[in-house]
Length: 295
Image 1 (cartoon, helix red, strand yellow):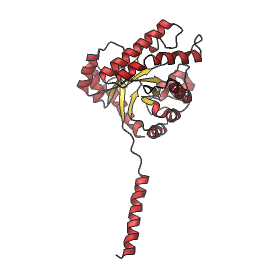
Image 2 (cartoon, one colour; image 1 turned 120 degrees about the vertical axis):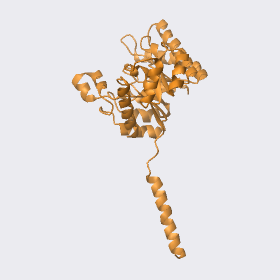
Image 3 (spheres, helix red, strand yellow; image 1 turned 30 degrees about the vertical axis):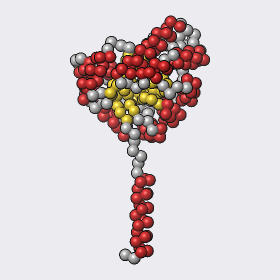
Image 4 (cartoon, one colour; image 1 turned 180 degrees about the vertical axis):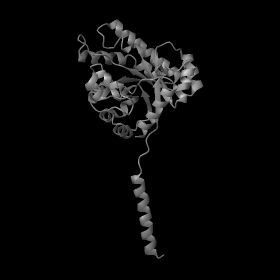
């Protein structure tokens, strides 16, 4: 082989390697799948048994509703025995005593509950507490909901920082923040690294497209709720019927959602919020979630 042939061959080889690297699909950041403890209602036995069944089904984490009946010691024991991580905590008082309530005493209950959940989150190694920020009602305007929710959240930021457990605001059907630009502005007004978004993929389909939310919120996305929604069922049976769709059988464009999550570099949990059941049902849900993550 002469020098000219050698150089040409080397250039072609280098070009092929570069082209191959360019064409190779981006490696997806690691996503972990989780379920709420309540979804293991069909599993008989103790809390430890339910944790183990969730792990055996193939899940990596569990979501808890706190404050609740479980003590910190019980959670730590079940977590250690099963190998599950605590994917998230739901602040239990936020629906009954919303931060948007005209009654200061009711607002105080959720402030206290959120502070407690954040503290407990730090103790059990959880990094996120889900919060519904409030609800717009006939006697609560959008502006009042906005202002009261921000005021209440700010009172909990110090606890979040001390516990190293963030507040994650969720998009729900509460007549409040039903599009992503408002969600981003809400977080920007609070302006704390300890407050972000718990994005519910299924909750926004009635109003828009999940991938739009992901790209607008970007690094503000701290956690995910995974569920389906069917516009066909909605139109046939009513708005809430849309949630009856099985995973991957609704109107979620999962490849587009996953692509958007890739773009923002999301690494964390996808927590199912669907109908649970026994061990067989949990295994089915874990398999469906793997397919969603791979889409």
